[in-house]
Image (tube, rainbow, N blue to C red; front, side, top):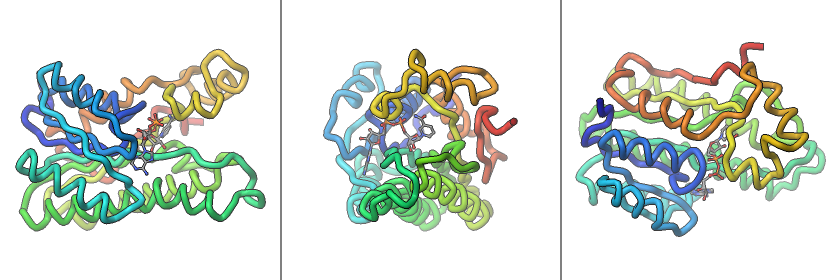
Length: 250
Ligand SMILES: NC(=O)c1ccc[n+]([C@@H]2O[C@H](COP(=O)([O-])OP(=O)(O)OC[C@H]3O[C@@H](n4cnc5c(N)ncnc54)[C@H](O)[C@@H]3O)[C@@H](O)[C@H]2O)c1
């Protein structure tokens, strides 16, 4: 069964890690996928095309409202509309206690991880609302959108903010049949973690894995399956929801 047949899907940060797996699975479920990323990369779009899906890459810096508007507009122009958005682009940021976090480092994380989600939602929601179209928006928060984590103040603050935005948008747009949900993954094996020196085989990776009820790190494809379901009509009465994979069951 294909959950996203002919749906037009816009994904930020769609060429790496969680976003890339979400794009691949959405394409396998019949979606047309626009990949918006700051990093020039046509390979993921080509892989989706070779698998028989329609896909294109658009360069986009989510910390710039003009860049986000351009990427959303290009998607609508290329595919003739928009049905689903995954606002997923994000960075980890500096690993310091608050007194040592640089102001630039703080601003960069808030600009990308929080303001970027706002810019995306602003233009996506305007399109759905003005065109009286149902839509599904999925924002990538984190378990760190619900609890603190030492050395990650800007990231934690941004991810909490994403949940606040998600809940407010769900209230504002639910009556128009526009659903807005957030995914709150535990720690997932992606370049974001490996770039920070964390792997399932090293000490820090094992310590983090141990914090999850499943006693392991998650895999991007496990998040992708949730994304595809949340984006689909199967989740037609799921709104304002945050899904975390059991991390917070402690
Ligand atoms: N990996 C985890 O453990 C984990 C856990 C919870 C939440 N998340 C969240 O999931 C999302 C994806 O993370 P990931 O682990 O796949 O990381 P990743 O580093 O593999 O992918 C992030 C993507 O975002 C893109 N990006 C970065 N800055 C951008 C910008 N300014 N504009 C547009 N694109 C930009 C990158 O180029 C990259 O393609 C992030 O929001 C992250 O915070 C990750």
